[in-house]
View: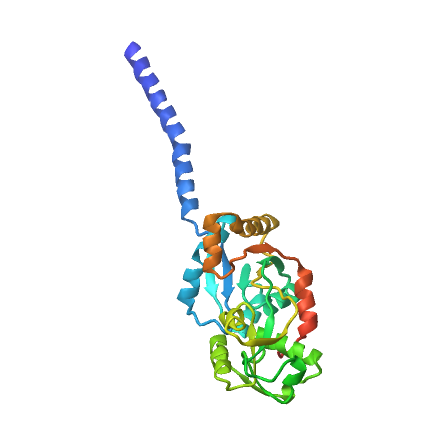
Length: 294
């Protein structure tokens, strides 16, 4: 009798142990399944502008540390896409396909803020300007004297072209009536102006040509107003928590040695600052909607 009781006790203990192990096993399986499940992906676009010469792999390499930081702050898997075609980019922004866009040109980000529900996160502390440049031997002194001259600009409807068009319009000059030639690469514009192939050139102040033109003894005859530079914008799918985290992290980059290395790598040496919609809306109001609707 005693042995029967002992065997029964052992059986009950074994059943209890098996019962307690079952939930643990199920919990482990559930955890493994959750870990294996794909995370929601957020697409982040990088747009270096039509004048950018780097291919997609070079662009992604240059922005790797920055996008790693963004992914950490977003707490989601981030897929980075290098975009060069402005028409395709505008279509994607209209569909809100990109959670974030970091762009050198500011016109499409401005349109996304005005028309597609995006919010400005940050922009570079250093403003951009569009410059009208001439050779040091040129007799041209002001933008009003550009009328009737040969003008070399970036691609038609590109950001810098649109600003240049607005500057000429304000000087009572219709660009459509002038002798204008377009080149995609601003370095090529600088070379052409150095060799006096054109009377007037148009470049971005933050380009290599823009930064060095006067240092090399040549002249700038007109500068645009200060313009938003290198903005990042966020789509409605970005939560307020994610938005605040990304903004705070990007603004803080200038406060550390490691952060300054990242900023230098992407060409924003002065760092980022918080951005508000008004600067972008003012930009669009000034340059106008020149590109045909998509």
